[in-house]
Image (spheres, rainbow, N blue to C red):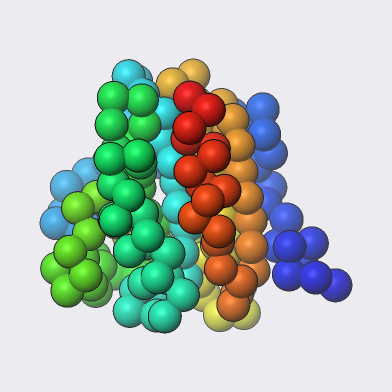
Length: 160
């Protein structure tokens, strides 16, 4: 079974995106339904802070931040790491977008999107573009060890 098949998200294009409230790396609280009131949200679930593939993916977003954070869209990283780990990682790498902690209850939001890997206690690489109506417009789910192609994310937000 391929990783993409094994980690089929439970939220499909056209579905209502599950609402959530999570704290970011600085303790600020973000609620999806509030975040999408005036623009789209790109939710980027990732396994672990300080890991090689995750660092590379989020650095690509940071290097292209104007494409991912503007009047049309905002980006939110989501992992099961605790907020202090996300804060250290964001400071070390220079990330200027919210990294949301799905640490407790552990993986609750990741589970609601169908991107939680029970055996390892982490989120897999799920990416969801959510409209202001809280509908999933585009999604991509990859398993552990598979890297997102930043060009695919660019194409998804370019269409807005």
